[in-house]
Length: 62
Image (cartoon, one colour):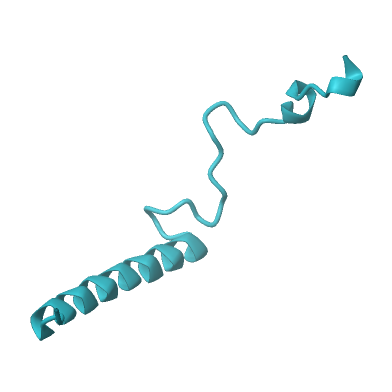
């Protein structure tokens, strides 16, 4: 079973759109343009977790 030229063209068009979208998002992120986070790394609500290591229990510390 072979892939038709029309199907191949549709897939190429979809991949081009995805690539363009990724490039646009990267440009917005790096340039700090409105609608993007301005190059900052998003933090979860409530701020970053700093207590992860303290939450972990080790069998040899019990």
